[in-house]
Image (cartoon, rainbow, N blue to C red; front, side, top):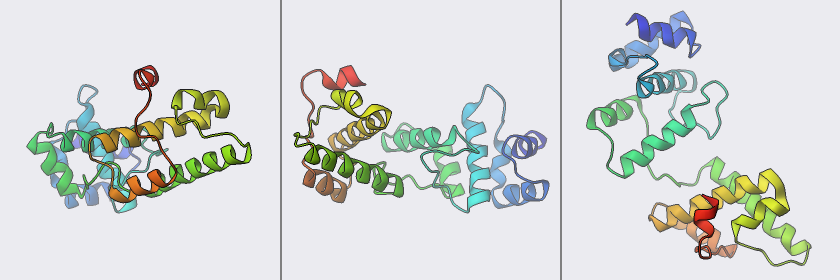
Length: 191
């Protein structure tokens, strides 16, 4: 218990009065070992602290307080959807209120990237140039922001291929004219 409480306070920033609340609302957290060798347990404790501070487990794409948590939660969803997650871990996450759901559901983050894609498409129209859906060329013409957007578009393609993209997202992206398939070798060069 001392290790978990210490990790909650020192690493996660939970105040001493809050530690009791975290542990009493989810006593299974005491089974975790926040050692350097057990990354999953450390991230789970961080997710518990995130839930304490925010009242939910919907970790945003970037989180200054818990910088490793966004990627970790994505991996948990992927592992769950691919049936690669141990039942004990599923129970722990579900007990904490973690929602597995669709990986590519429409969220504020998704809307933000979609808006950027609309702006990118409109910019091409103002330049009287045809939209090039080959993401390998995006960084050359749009810099780092275009590269991030290109990665997001590639993820949408992959989610659609795996039937993980919501019908609404497919419809909205199709309306913009997305080319769902990349040319030969483009995906392997990019990824």
